[in-house]
Image (tube, rainbow, N blue to C red):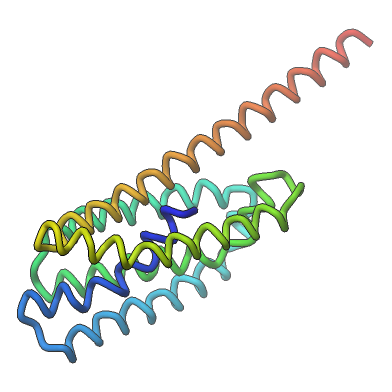
Length: 191
């Protein structure tokens, strides 16, 4: 979640400066971030509308969203056009908005209804830590390397860590459910 907080807040922090460094007007950088916010709202609305259909598979949806976000950040590292920045913000805003719509519900899915509040509080705290340290780290990376190329790749790797951790959770839950079904089958056959 710390990686997720880092990766969530950084586009809003670095993208305007990155575009200004590339020579675009400040007005254009504001419009790009506005697209990010608008698509975030659309993503949350869309995910809320289809939420009942993905119930029980929210972690899988998060895995897909994290993978898309990782790929789009790799593409953004190599992009220098304003059009690419708009596409980046539209896709990442929609994906992050969709992810945030199921933010609380995924905690229920991870722990099968146990310790939801503790997990949610820990996730929110970790996201805040990532969001607090992220801009400082991004600025440091930019100062050392002289560009935001490495920052976009760092964001992509954070989403990669998030996708990997989510896949481990999915496989662990599937394995646990499979084992419990196998134990039930063995208990029924012995009776």
